[in-house]
Image 1: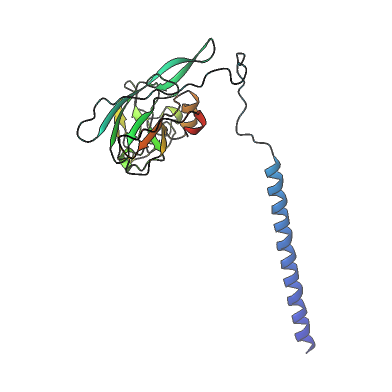
Image 2: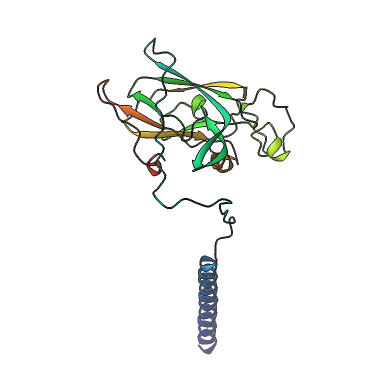
Length: 242
């Protein structure tokens, strides 16, 4: 009987030891997580303006122009957009070099109707490959702007994969054998078979979306109306074009 009691006591001690060890590990993990959460962000440095900024709310809000279709036949609307370098006066008296859609900042608005397909031909005259994605759109895969489905500039030199930001396979150093790459132009077709909503198109290239938008191709808004008489304009605020 004594041996059995000793065996039971040893088992209890082991269980208590294991429970204590697990509790200590959990407490250590929570403490480390809390410490990491309190650490300041180190994702990037703040870039300050090299020129004096105007007083707040003194510069008029730029309203994007509405792009006109080049064709409306066949039950669909067709547009053409050229991605190119330009400059704009964002701050009074200062010209800022930009990458743009149609040379405009912000980019032009495309007004469409629900259920009426839209095809946009993008021409890439920028110095880098690009991809166009309609954010929030119900879009077939071929026109969804997969990050490695590049539109190469006309003079872009083919390169081997894994060569960093200069490579042809997305300029990201990752080879994608299924990528559909075109040169200079690409047609994106959007059925717009969805609820009326505000969408935005933007560059979607692998590992380069943020740097591209930072250089200026501010996404244009797309308004979808239910009937020909209903016209929904781009919202009067840049923060809404997201």
